[in-house]
Amino acid sequence: MELICGIDEAGRGPLAGPVTAAAVILPERFPLTILRDSKQMSVKQRDEVLPIIMEKAIAWGVGWVWPEEIDRMNIHIAALEAMLRSYHEMGVLASRVLVDGRFVPPGMENCEAIVKGDRKIPEIQAASIIAKTLRDRWMIRYSWIEPDWLFDQHKGYPTIEHRRRCLRYGLSPIHRKSFRISLPHPA
Image (cartoon, rainbow, N blue to C red):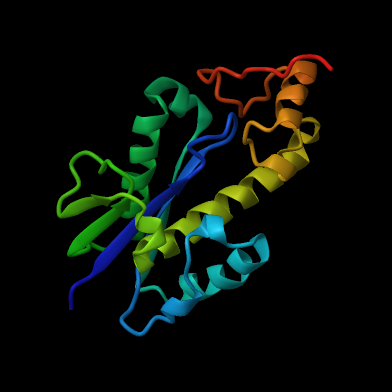
């Protein structure tokens, strides 16, 4: 049986928090109709599908790259590193690896980049759901520690309110210092 692994990441665009990737190998009889690109699903839908993926998958893994690493590497290299970490965390070697996007992690064999793969490849869709859901949950929990930045609401993305909070409070320990945070004009 050919084992196809899908990999996707979440958190490339935020100003704060980790970039997170997931790798997933699905069984032949997985209920594919529950999968979509995570960006096309509500939080409730992702929360309902996540345990099904985790329970029924042959294997899955998550890779995290933290803000200080992102600042050292740059976000592109960090996203590829998160993908590589997720694959190794899975603990299973796949026959083929399909990665969402234009680039594959360096040194990964039998790997192919598929632009918009999260719209058409079930294994990438499953990885997309895991990565997005777990990263969002991490940001919500971190907001319990640092409530001033409202990470539970925007998950670190550069919303106007997030940028206003950065102007008011400065940067939190999880902000990416290498990212240019353009602040809104005072109203």
